[in-house]
Structures are given as C-alpha cells and as structure tokens.
Amino acid sequence: MKTDLHVKRRLGAIAAGVAAFALFDLLSRTPSVAETVYGGLGPTISSAISRASGIVPFSLAELVIVAFVVRQIWGLARGLREVRLKDRRLGNALAAGGLRFFSDLGIAVALFYLLWGFNYARPPLEERMGWNSDDIRTEEIVALAEELVEATNFAYTTLRGSEDGGSPTVPPTEWKGMEEALSSGWTTAGPIVGPFPLWDFGYGRPKPLFTSRVVDYLGITGFYFPWTGEANFNAGIPAVTLPHAIAHESAHQRAFARESESNFIAFLVAAAADDDFSRYSAYLFAQRQLLNAMARADRDGAIALVRQRFPGVQRDVDAIGEYWAQFDGPARDAARKVNDAHLRTNRVPGGVLNYGRSVELLVAYSRSRGGWLLRRELSP
Image (cartoon, rainbow, N blue to C red; front, top):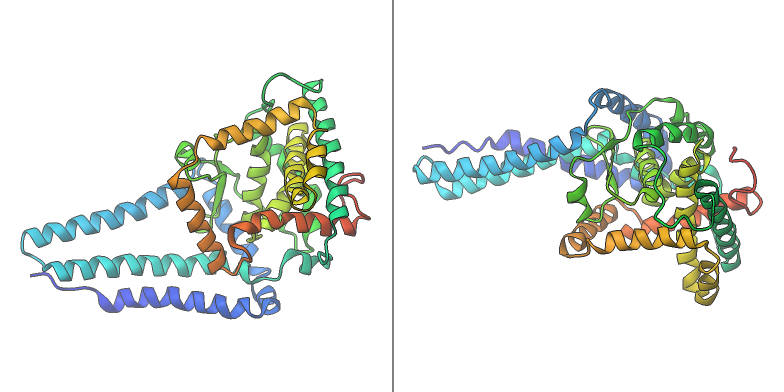
C-alpha cells in the first residue's frame, strides 16, 4: 500500500514560499532598502524573462495556469483511484493531495516575489520622483478635468472628422499597430517616470488572451504574469480602452507594481504615442478618472462638464458601460474580491480602490509641470 507523502521535499517548497513572503514583509517596512536591493535587479529580471517568453507569439501564461489546474485535478483523480483500488487509504491520499497543492503554491509564491513581487515593497512613484501629492484641492481636479474634456473632444474630431461619428470609435489598425505606436510613447514618456532606463531594456510584446471572452466575465482587461514576464491583454474589450489597457500591463512588465502607478504611466505612454487613436484612449481614460473624482466633491460641476463632451465621445463612454454591464454577475464579484485580497496582501493601500488613486498621480505630475497635463510637450 502506498503511503509515501514526500513530506521533506514538499515542506521545503512550502517553506520557500513562506520565507519569500516574510522577506517581502520585511522589505515593505523599509522601502528605501527595497529600492536599493531590488530597484535595479527587478527590472533586469523581468526584462530577461519577458524577452525569452516573447519569442513565442502566444500567451504562455494561459498554458501555465491550465497546467497548474490540470496537475491538481490529475493528482486528486489518481489519489482517488488508488483509494478505490485499495492501494492507498483515503486520509493518506487527501494528505498527499494537500501537500502537493501547497508545495506547488509555495514554489509559485517564492518565484512570484523573486521574479517581480518585491516591486510592491519599493517606495511609491511620487516619492521616488519627488512629486507632491499632498492636500489635493478640488479646484486642481476641476482644472485638469476641464483640460481633459477639451483634449478628448479635440482628439475625437481628429479621428472622426466631426463631433459625432455616429458609431463607437474603432482603431484604424489592429492591436499590433497600437503596440507599435505605444513603443514611441515609451521612448518619450519613459524618462519621465524614473532615472533608471526601464524603457531601454527591451521587453516581449504584449499578447492577446485566447480566453478573452472568459476573462470578460471576470471583469479583467488584462494581467501581468510574472512567471513568464508577459503583459497579457483582453482583446475583446471596447476598442477605445485597448491602448491604455495594453500600456497598463506593459507598465507592470516594467516593474511598476501598484495599479495606480500603472494606470498613470499608461496614460503618459498612450498620450505620448505617435498615434491619434492611442492619444484619444489616454485622454478618455484620464477624463473619466478625473470626472469621477470631481463628482465626489462637486457633483453638479462634474455633470456640467460631462455635458461638454461631444456626442461621439459620450457614445464611446456609453459603449464602454454597456459592454461591461453584460458581464455583471457572481464571477466578476468573486474576481474583484480575489484581486482585492491579492493587492491588500501585497500592501497596496485600498486594495482594488488603488486603481482610482491614479488621480493623485495625475495631480502630482501636473504640479511638477505648472498645473497642466497636456498643454506642454510630454518631456522630463
């Protein structure tokens, strides 16, 4: 009868995961040390992995996730078969399955932090850049919201030739064309977000998810997969949100872990891209963020600004809402809770609410430029 649980080996793998998290917890208490130790090493590692996985044109992340799930199911099925054949006791089979799962998880956690996760312990972007994000005033948000509404309207007419194109806006090229345009944005915007040459390292291209329709139900526009260094995006989302979503995951790929920072950097990159559609995507994203923040303090003022949108811009905003409304449900709620737990575990203030904190970075950045986001060329 089989009884071997491979206890030492599997407990060692579990211990590796616990040790990696303990080290992360220690580094998160001393962000300056994390920056010194990992600020250069982390991007170097993720760049190397990304370039290696980038040789493959499809998402390896999806295969890894499927392989992990299949391994657990196969192990459970094999254990139950051995119980049925009386080759193993039920308790022993359950113990073997539990040890296998947690040892696999331990290895995954250890690799997560070593390959990328320690970036969560680094100081916030505004601190690294010396930007002031304290005591944000409502009038600052209003001024930027007005600027972005005007910029978005102008970008829309540049794309469509009128204030209302009569249908949701679609890109002139497929996503590969967007990715190429965004590369010019990284060249321009990269130096703004740190002296370390993240933009020069070289990274694998963002990859569309084969399971895009599945992740729609989870409310996911994309994800970065540290184990393969891939920036994965949902190819089915509304087209006007796609350039920003691609740039967001590419920002994670370049070692910006916090969601607010990736949102902000994606805005900079898309706004600086040599492509009208990418710039429109950036402006529309920032406009919506700023108007949402403004509405919490001045709802009537926010509504008045929304009414200044060109009809075609409002149609695009409505199309975004309608698209995601069809996927509301328990799967999306569960995915949000899992993401929230992940972010809070990694010391991201507010959990999923951190996505909206990009407004603070927009204000901090505008302060460094005299109060504007776009009225001067994007430059360091």
